[in-house]
Image 1 (tube, rainbow, N blue to C red):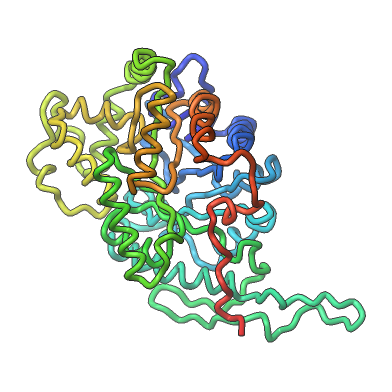
Image 2: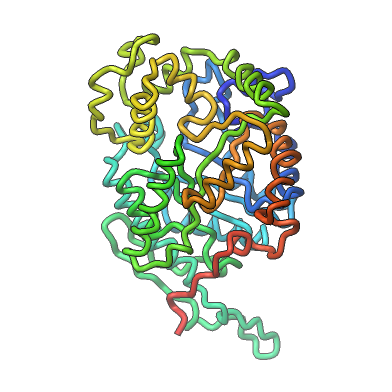
Length: 428
């Protein structure tokens, strides 16, 4: 997220307000994370402008293009791109992801989203986005086709025998002949099977449809929870759904986001968080809140609770899990709209923690050992400063307790996550 995950991060004195399109900024972040031996770098994305551009940077480099560049500036860290299944076709996207996996030496991951915004649909010739259920049904078929395309070259397909003149065995290059509800794809892919078999499959939806989809397909789940109790309930639910889908629950890594404000004392950490909050523009937060609930900003009164029609949990076609999270937060803590948009400014519903390095580490450990997370997506409120603070102050504590690596042991993203290469469905 360019200058940081907090919506006002670009306004900090030390921030680069043009970080979004500055390749050297992204290379610096990737190298910093790799020097700390992070598993992966994770890029958010959506195929539309973020807001109106009035109050925060609205643009994003296309993630697979950016990750291809970062793959040449790094050698070990995993590279995960968010790409929509709703506004792509399986063949083209499977080809691009396989290509990134090849050029990175097996470090590519795909965060699968179904795109909740109506503004995104408008960029692809639609009057509105497909329904929530329709988007997930399409995504399900999309994944089945993509996996088959990645498998369409068996490992032994290429002989490259100069003596006989045979390059490949056509019997080991498989046509799909897929004819489904949403796609008709002949195959095979024109890219050899990726080094990881399939790029690592990540999923970021926490609705009922999203959790069922994750149970069938995901190998890692990026999720938002503002309390340990909510995270632990989600963790137990997703592991149970994975087991019911006939998969090993240990093969699905649950990674909540955490937004850490780190200070040498609690007072220093609170002052840092306060600095971000003072730079927020309330109008921006109000527009973002209205967008989540698919309504007009005028329905909200800043110093009143959420309106009753919002608390009644209207059926939304957009991000259902995020709207539920906001309602639960507002009701649990009796927040006004002004307080809600303040709380969402740093992580849009992800867990924000303000404290010392020891307190941040203790919280991470308690969620991990208490069955609420397998790991975390570190969402620094400002970049690169917040990431540097985490690397320098929190990671040594986790390493001291034997909970984070000293050095990379593998070379691929799957090896970092402790996940196997999937078998080829066409292999005899």
